[in-house]
Length: 223
Image 1 (cartoon, rainbow, N blue to C red):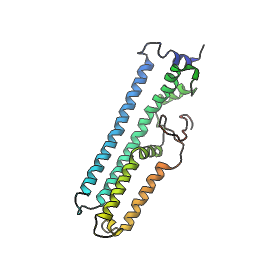
Image 2: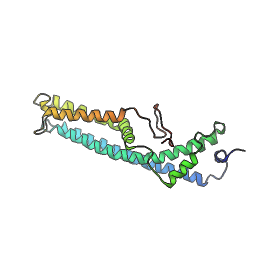
Image 3: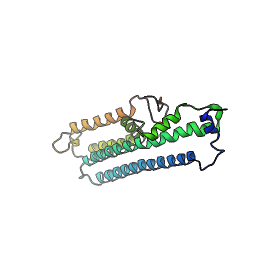
Image 4: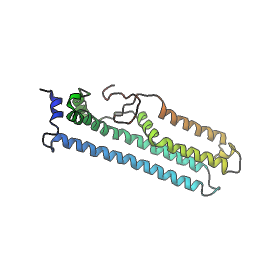
């Protein structure tokens, strides 16, 4: 006879399809979907704002170039909001992946066994006291890699083109904003880009479960 985990997996498709476990799984999928939609909504707003800013900036040569940088600041605000939402989304996704790995996968192929022997204890503890599974830094890195690095690249490219090709003065003078010299403005932009690249690309051991990546992932219970 198999243990309790084996019985749970083996009887998954033989019992009542309206069992509490089935309802639990459907509920987790639903919550994960809602948080996924919240992420997409923030991304849509970021793309819309960026498109509006770039359209206005290139409408006339008289329009100031720093409006594009303001668009970059707005992208940073959306990134901050989206990273916070991503941490919430990852909580529900981690639960879904735990059920898929240890219940459904085991039910479909029992000889493979269960990957994490303490998954029920971990899942129960998470239901009693839900906590984010990943750091804010990792959430920022995820959203930068997937969405915001390309968008920031568009901002920097458009701003560089604007201050070099559509301005009466030469660069870096053309990059000046009011009394702030163009060299300082350019330096701040360069530092912002380097900071974003550092957050997104620095070596780390990822904790988010279910992501499509080849880098090393820390197990959920490895603190």
